[in-house]
Length: 359
Ligand code: HEC
Ligand SMILES: [Cu+2]
Image (tube, rainbow, N blue to C red):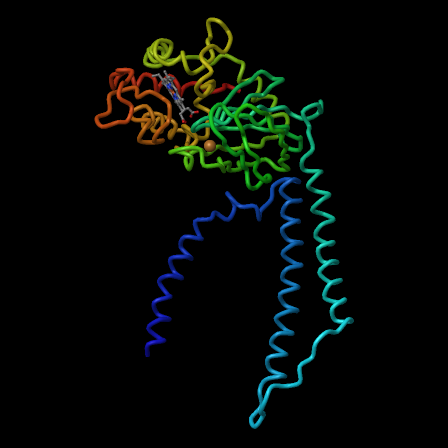
């Protein structure tokens, strides 16, 4: 009876674990569903190590169970059985077999360790992207194209992307599980990393190094598109966007007063991107897949709602982030605010959401 009660107690525990583990998205944040050659090689290393380990486990378990059964104490048996010590043949066998097994794992591991650490920073065919980790957002700078964006990393398929990983403050770690392993962004240095995406798609990225209060919200998206589409995207990031309503142009004026010191946008008069670099670049903001990397723009209309949520209280969305509150929020950690009214926020939402490429 007691034992049954114990087993029953395990049921909710198992159910809870199933529930929690099901949170590990099958397609999104997994290394088991590779979408490019780097991730494929890494998965192969996992599988070969796993195969060797499972093989060893099975052989050892079978011998163990056999010995337990075959040499168990029989009825009527007294005293300890004959003790056997030392057997050169056996000792050589169980030294050589593990050596061979480790050798099998070592060959691809060493080969891929060097291969995956290749530096493509001088390769003219690779796309050079500087990735700067900030508390708590990602900056992507296309070094040769002179385009800068945040949270959404757009890349062409089939081309090696050479990432120059840097940090503006503390340690971060750049990780896109379906494309390949993570690498750190350390302040004061540049770490090289490369990834390739085979097929168009949206791949999830995360900061994988505890970097402060909102570390868990430091997400980004990698959007792989065809090379043609990529060229169009780059062109659109340098092309003017019309501001086509009175409310939006009011928003533009407020933006130029209150926001442009930190954030850059495309200025149609000067025909270039202008503004500060300490905060995310907001060129073509209406095309973004997220607001602040974490509020998902599932449908095109969502961008307005998400912008509104962000601008009403950025600290509520990402505690500890460095954007000043546009409005006074009672009890907020940000003591001062930019003092904007509800109407001014609506105008800013209209302006930023309308910044869409016209391609
Ligand atoms: C003192 C600098 C500063 C000022 C001024 C500022 N911001 Fe920000 N803003 C930031 C920082 C830093 C972030 C990144 C927060 C994070 O994600 O951790 C941010 C994030 C954002 C985002 C999300 C960006 C993204 O990539 O999705 C929007 C939208 C935004 N700000 C709009 C505004 C608007 C509109 C104003 C003017 C009312 C403004 N900001 C004023 C610093 C600033
Ligand atoms: Cu981080």
